[in-house]
Image (cartoon, rainbow, N blue to C red; front, side):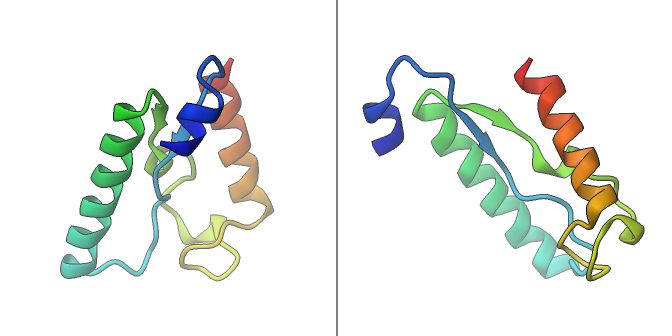
Length: 87
């Protein structure tokens, strides 16, 4: 809400969480709830929502810790995906 009020005419983006390898069924439900809450709040405040889950391949070889933190290749995918959306 603050960012929307401070920058009413700016293009604003919100990125939902990226994929992570270690989600079990319970963790997946929480992940989905958090993602949906971020997306809903962002949309209500005029942000364009970017689905982080779609930015980095769902393959541990793109993650530095083989779980959640992208490595150089993962961040390259992340950046290219963002550029396509923002352009």
